[in-house]
Image (cartoon, rainbow, N blue to C red; front, side, top):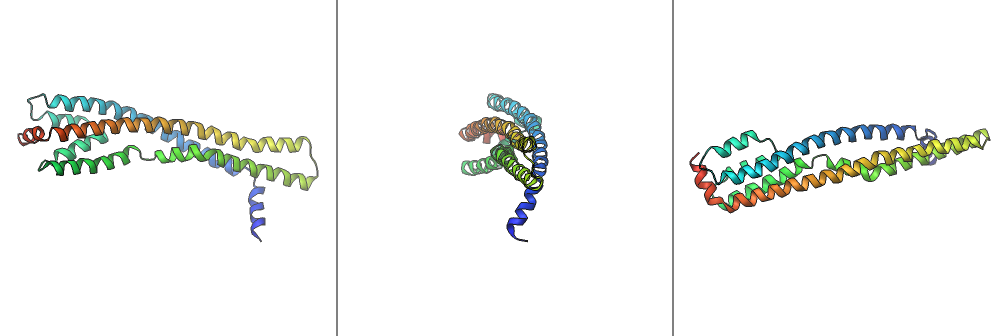
Length: 212
């Protein structure tokens, strides 16, 4: 069996398996969109609150206030503050610890976003591939039966469903990918602001931390 025959056998299967693949990808993307929507909403809200609390902390005389703030916060940005507070021996050490933690934080914030971006870009091509297979299958049946007319039109219309499903999967994936990238960027802006604020107030943090 040569390569052409193998490809023909795959094409004879039509677009059904492509549709099944797109449905599975759609379910995965919907689950990821729901998960990220909940996480980003909570993270961004808590990060904004954390930024305000950090600024207030430096105006407070309570040495334990920062620990209370960190215990009440559950965002990736919290680790950046902990990394900075844990490296108060010298300013350069603090900067390196914060920058290293920012890299890990960005990876966590953007985790699995590449899946949505890839799906938004490539799902239409997967659907188009299914349409091509469906059309090949239709013409194969036409060659065997020798009948045309409405049967051919029906087969082609069924094949085009794969392209439609591909677009149906791609559009929300692309839209939410861009939304989540914006939210991710907003969170990293707060991370940078907190990092620069802590580095700029190194001496004050150091003296207050010694009193904990």
